[in-house]
Picture (cartoon, rainbow, N blue to C red):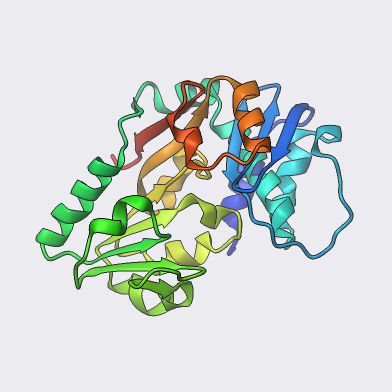
Length: 252
């Protein structure tokens, strides 16, 4: 039951969809398939499984790697899942134009969080995003896997902090390491927003209390994105014409 969300993401992917190209860089992993392209954050933790070439497997086969505990393989898996759900055809089918393109920037997100804090709401972010660097408030908590900045708390604090939140901002990277199901459970009384291009643009996320996806990725020119991923690009990917960050409302 814990990982049912992954079954829902994989079951609709048809068998026989070929993978045309795959890349894994320092920050991002990218899969290009017959139906579309997807990205996910690269996790470098590996348990030493023999290497397999994703390009010799189908999209559905690689997507099923998400149930592995070799996180390097899980990065490929989530990119494969996103190659299906974040394709242009699926976006048009599932959201019928209810999408805002490239409307998300650091100032917009900073203003959103600042407004909620001014209303005495508790905001918790799972993941330290750049726009948060200027926000200092007693009701604002940042949870990080590897706390590096003064205000970061270890991600294990989620058990205490998230149930107290009014707004939960959760990084899409939590799909990759499979922390997402527990984070959603802890945030069930919050307004949940998923952030970043690791997030699948899957309408069924609303069943888990997700109200909005911010920064979900639509890849327009796969060759450009694949090349940048291979060469170690990070946030630079968000500012090129080959890639759009989307904002999608899931709440009715």
